[in-house]
Image (cartoon, rainbow, N blue to C red; front, side, top):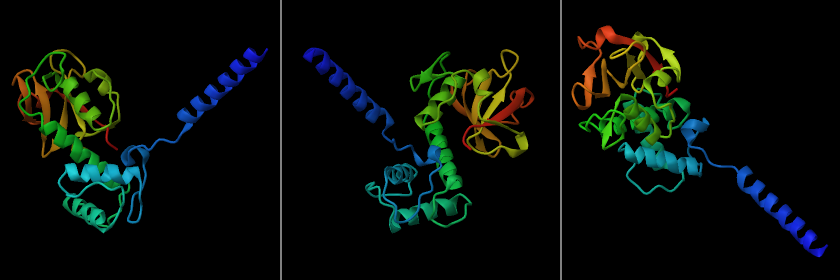
Length: 220
């Protein structure tokens, strides 16, 4: 009887501990959590912000998690350089633009990496392996194939393309069979089997222009 009671209390204790672990609040990154950050705050989201601004060259100090005057100035500099309202407050629009810049930085850092069918790492990429890798490195999860990525996010017209959008083409088979990341000014970065590497191409390229079928906005 005593053994049964002991086992019962152990089971209850384990259940309570497990519940506490899995119900404990976890800090999501400010971008995905739609959290507004501003001067005077102290949180892990501010640490994420400082790390991101440091990666983009706007913050040159140790990340403290405190949103002080230096962090505010870094945010204002970023906003000014990206055509945003310069208020030093990180709402969703500023957070989204930071995420776009991080994605583009990751994408460009892989220029020249060899094309590899089925590849999804810096040793070699195919087109959708490249886009899924770049987005995942920045905390955004999308399906692995171009066809499935074409159903992610929201559709955007060619005239409304923004940097960070995924652009799709029909190449070796019908439907979305090739994908890249739009950089702006009609250019996109992609894993090109023709070039044999990660490269930058123009949407008006004679090969890609007639094969363009649409775009999806993943970073909103």
